[in-house]
Length: 462
Image 1 (spheres, helix red, strand yellow):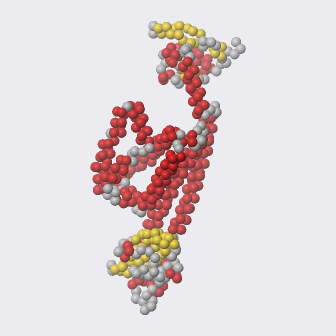
Image 2 (spheres, one colour):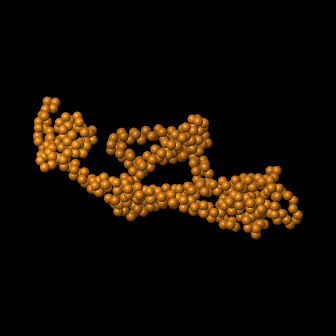
Image 3 (cartoon, helix red, strand yellow):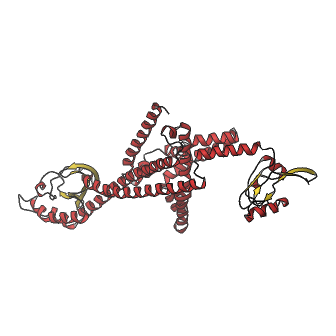
């Protein structure tokens, strides 16, 4: 790959990451945003996206393999998907939209219910979480490796011939990607949990009888703010401490504060949007107020249907960042532990493989196997190689022809070959031996004379 190629790859990956982070923030507003894009995506586009997700970087490799192995007709294996994809786009997507569900497990519950649905959900979760997920990840990693080999990426990175370096790079990349995904997901979960928490606290405080009584009571002239403030400031501060919020502010519909963690801010105007609460709903936003940027919810206080006050509850962004940093520390420790286990395991496996291969690497093994196979093929006599237990390790083409062996002979002991019995017995006995030049014998078999090479075994020294 040339510098321009690396530039294109870097730009593509950066753009993909940026789009993913942007969409992740949008999708963190609610479950509907996360699963179905807030139900603003047309049904045909949602169905087309579900069909398009089946095509990825490994698809061209898979299709190329089909054509090479089976010819053009092999494409029918994936051309047959057209029926499923068209049905998914134009039939099922519309029905799923009409059902108002978020996930396929909701559809299972809706269709079967109770125990049958529980069994189906559990079975589906197991299959997708373990075997299907593992196969999919392995399939994708294999495709990535093939693409990297074809583009010569390992060569340019100086990782050719060093399996441990390649394993370390792959492990670090996978862990880094997983850690980044976890961080994004953790940040989104923290925001969602904070939104839910401030909404719940604001709604609870707005519904408290003591708050309603305080804001609707009559006060002497000049005490319209200080009177309700004296009645509610202690209550608001107790709620703030117990819910771990950064502020609980009760205010007039016009935005003048009755309560605030900083008493000097009482009587001042609230900084933030009040439109949603004045309309009778609950508003959630991130806004910079007197305590800095914060995630806040504002709810109306009603008395006989009329909005008589507003309650705002918020958590500062610094507080959220502190929680995120704590989770980051935990995730970092987990990632470091996984990396350590992976590296140690990789080293142990590499050491074991080296012992099994007599210290030879992949290239050396390939070269030895090539020479070994060439020597076997060049020998005109039949040659059978046995291990210490008398099992057939290898046999050349002439040996297969003379002995009538097939491909499944590898790994067999050859007990069905009567002339090998004494030889195999001596080999398995471990007696000292050496192989002398082959002696030729002609043995009739099925009316044909075959030449069989039989080694003469002798003890040491004689």
